[in-house]
Image 1 (cartoon, rainbow, N blue to C red):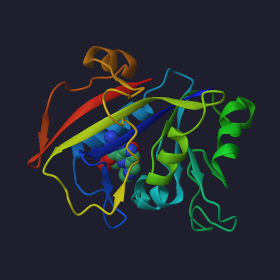
Image 2 (cartoon, protein in one colour; image 1 turned 135 degrees about the vertical axis):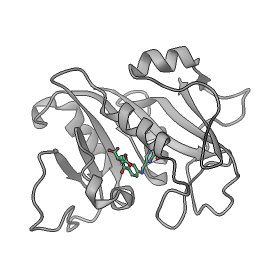
Image 3 (cartoon, protein in one colour; image 1 turned 30 degrees about the vertical axis):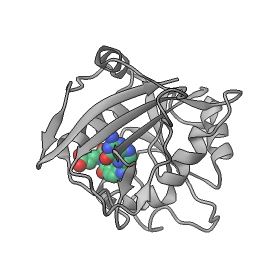
Length: 208
Ligand code: FOL
């Protein structure tokens, strides 16, 4: 397990959050996130790796994200993932104090109760930055599933993902075709500009 996929929804200026939440409500976009991150061959599961703020931003009833191995990173060693008396769901969830130790677990399949198919980095801003900067000598990000929010501009965002694309001329990233995205995803991905609640967006895949 040495490749990671970043999945993110971001505006044209890379806004991803506002007031500890997503800036928009896009049920079909969220369904895409759930479908892609869940889809795995029989007998395997995908992993979703997230920072503590992202974990807390997921509605209680949806966390840990079902049918996926959840890995949460928090440098606070006293951090409690769930109220101590809450019913323990069958979904595996691990707490790690840093990215390296989380990646260590992913590379040791015997430390996880289910074979891992794919690993997704699901945010937030600081984990996106840290994972996109990993050197290719170890586990690194070779793919970004970017849902580009085209309009409106959502100028009130207070969290931004790092600009991984840079300028077109010097970018190491190539935008894959919709066919490639569809093929890789293995599930239905709508093509072209989507619109929900007056918000326009597009499902993109970038590879390096
Ligand atoms: N990537 C994309 N493309 N869209 C996102 O909204 C997104 N969100 C995060 C990371 N990458 C993303 C982080 N935030 C849930 C909530 C917030 C969240 C991620 C996931 C969540 O509740 N997911 C449920 C689906 C719930 C529903 O159907 O409404 C899940 O099962 O995945």
